[in-house]
Image 1 (cartoon, one colour):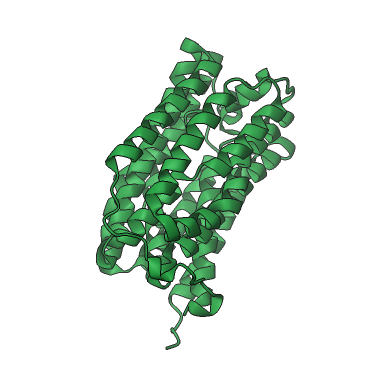
Image 2 (tube, helix red, strand yellow):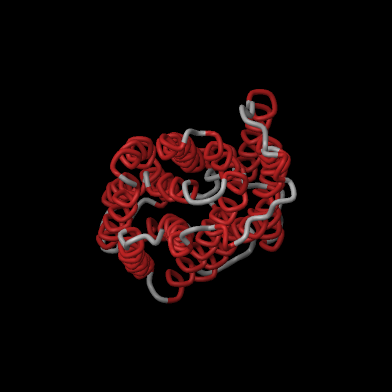
Length: 373
């Protein structure tokens, strides 16, 4: 899914969009389109997973994404690309479904560690994807790269179908039970966790539409632009791979609030120098450090939600959490593409830094306030 990131602006340009500002904005629209529709349908898939099993949701998502990603390589206009990205959001949701499956089956005392391990797997894909996306287009072309990505997802479909087993059946006795807002004991905490998931995605995605253009302004050799952009995108994922399971284990022992507040604060500080780098290697190093700081954030957010909702409604509530993340994946690219195209690419980093700082303050207030019995 991340394989297309380094060359998406170039593909948008091939489809007839001219001018740096228009390319940045359309890249943000095309990238965010998937997460717009995915965010709308995520609670529906979460509810169906509660009723009929989470594996069936993973089978559906992997097959749907394999088809839509392949068809993106056949697009001839920007509207076809955006339409297919919207369709991919409706059909997809594999990593979020996997998160719900693990969250519902892992022991509560080890939930953050288990989710951190899963997050490491997802981030490993985010690490390898942009690297492959940086190397393949010059060798086989952009359209064949899309087809290759679809083929990889089809392999994931086969692995899901034949290898995954649900060790716990869905709670059939609760088929008619719906989650109500009154069932959640700590509503401010839930709202804060949903907002934190949104902020994480904004932080990760706000520079995605402009990163290739930003690298182009920093490097002299145009043939190295996609490669450096791929390294920048992969650096953050590598940091998260290395830190996610470790920070999850620390959170299980020391408390989730420490990791959540610290991750947001450190990432906020690291975004400031990213706006003033003068070479690609500097941006690669800063994104790696940012990935290290944010690696344990989403597993901790998910663990906090898991500990504060009824067992029979885990899929529904985590579906809303996934929706919040998808909102961030829509807002982030749109915000970054608009600011980068209309104002300045540096302001995209600084604005994201401010949002994360505000998120750190909000989490500190909510997670440390006295809890009502």
